[in-house]
Length: 101
Image (cartoon, rainbow, N blue to C red; front, side):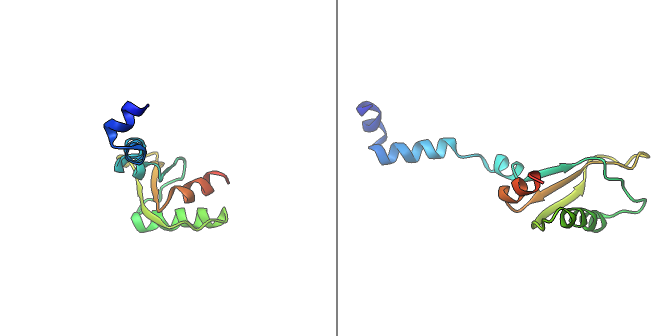
């Protein structure tokens, strides 16, 4: 143990190095705030603003009003009209709160 401490310059530096190594990357951090909604039908002329309104209404019905960074349909539009919706929330805590509902 003392050899490792000496190599990293002491316990505090070792702890800092371990924290950096275990910290999620930026992409992982961003992905951990994403929610994918399946099965919500798509209006014929639905745009991003319309999708966001529908998602916010659904969140309000659940008693939640998280800050939404991105809200968009994923994939190519098809006749089925039920493309998944990717919602990026401001925080992981907001996502956890929604998932508990």
